[in-house]
Length: 305
Ligand code: C5P
Image (cartoon, rainbow, N blue to C red):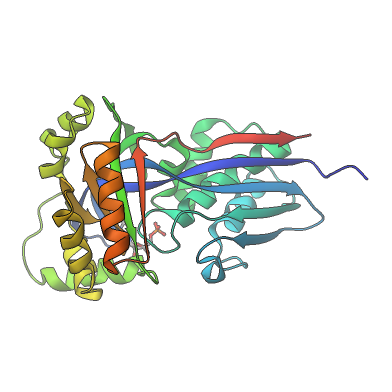
């Protein structure tokens, strides 16, 4: 028996180097100035021809990943099939390395990966703008998972402008036990702000210049995340994680997106290794991973006709 045709796509995690959150909109979302940087922690998504739609997931935290329509990769396959008027006859297999509910766009990555893998498997050759529109329907961070590199996200984060990056940045991620709910973190952000005036979100020119120059020393003081106070309020233990990475020599540390992963910018691969070692030894995180950004967006790495 010959193996069924399959396509495997590799898709990166992200860190928000700037996440500036506007006031809540009428539709419940928040307008953002969201500067995404893709980093080289990856999930793999394999789409294999099958009688019916199903999904499996292995790797850390995979027991918390839904296998019904709550799974964004399943919804991605359904939406793409509907877009082309076909039935989603596909098995999706996800190998997770991106932390689940960790503020690093793991679910979004799987959705973008499934979309690209199914498009290749089915030979539907969906134009890029249509793929991006389907991504935006799936979630605010999904378009960036497809594109990778670095980008400014406006609107709820889905309207992307690609950004130039002038070098490699060395990061360490402190991974936490258990996730944080993104809607809960946004709600806590609104609650903490109370009646305070919130200006419309704008990208920071100094941060964009530091990215374009590949200058970690200039990027460090510009890193900003409006969701950090909310993530710290919901998970006070993250303060010790941030303090540990900074004390170990990171240029800066911040909560990644809605958390609870924490991101530390360092000056070199050697410094990143030292910060990762100190974090792992501290007991203030589940695991620490050194990696780099930018990383490529969703990429086909294997295809069997
Ligand atoms: O778009 P996505 O489904 O990933 O968003 C998850 C949740 O995060 C939303 O339901 C909303 O509560 C919150 N969110 C937000 N503003 C954004 C993006 C997400 O309030 N720009």
